[in-house]
Image 1 (tube, one colour):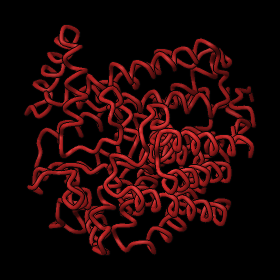
Image 2 (tube, helix red, strand yellow):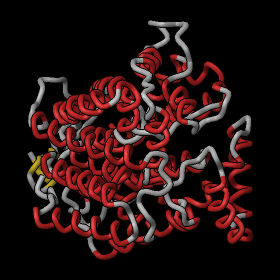
Image 3 (cartoon, rainbow, N blue to C red):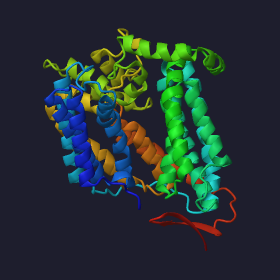
Image 4 (cartoon, one colour):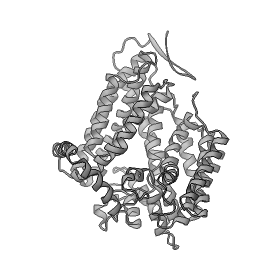
Length: 498
């Protein structure tokens, strides 16, 4: 990969100095500013150790750092708010963050270059195979997404059934089809374009899935897949692409995010048709009530005792989504007086990761519900809770205290990097899918989610899917496989005749 975009040492020094001076100027305590600057500096060094944006681990780590410490701290500087406000235990929270990122930096330095002899996914070897795989992946991914949506409305044990696991595995084919489509468009236009009709269909399905659930991540995921695929293929971004990225970013901040927060009040219908009707009704009524929507979204977010808001400005409600230090502080506070829950959350995640045919009567409630109850982000009734937006930073402190903060960040997170770097080639389609999955799954969730889901289950799903898809196109009557081959170079994909 030719474009790593690592940070120059002077750039890291400038970032640290700017943050420290900005936080002191806004009234933040000296200790908090020093620890926040240390954490950001450790994150910058770790980013360089992992290879910047030229590696799977570097890309995934970028989101982890941005969503936990970087955006939150620089956002406070830009809004001129004290960085140590709106946290339950600010001194302890920022100390946990600094220690976590320090040991993550050391662990990345020690283990990031290790490669294990793990199985590889079956990648398409010719342009013809790639196009046949696109059709198979688009059809299979569509079945998976529809199946997950239907099971989601069914409720109860349907969401933890064997069928649900099968549909979840099939749904990974949809982003794969999007990667293949972007690859094909870049190749067939010699790098002139990246978006076409083949890209449009999986892109549209993913957008509709996000719209149906009022999911902000559902809006960002297809955009991220297209952007990451283009970047990893050496696509030359021009001024119009930069302008489009700025427009999409502004649209997300000022329109999409407030609307989806407002539209969540329309969720909960009993069928796909009713839910789609409710969302379309919300969309139709939004323009005439936009001023009310934006004002109420900000006010309700700040007034809701079950929500965690690191920023005080109502207009900054979207930034709270990228300031997970706030939710982390609630769990750290719950365990700040000496209470630690030990293996409880890990055990719940392990049991929840077991398939039904192995443990038929396994509990349906995982650690997310348990931790949400513990830190107060969820309601009083466990049956009605859904999700806790903590990260492994607070979960590691909550389990065994400082020792687990150091051990998990030093061993477990670098282990995820090693596994993905060992299995996937970032220049190949399934490697791009693995990159995107790690990008979205590394940041939020518990330690058990990283160990059992990210490190174990997701790679297995991708490997099995790739082998099955490769076998399927292998038995199809395909012509032209010998006509065009895809060669790799350090500058992207090259199409050459045989």
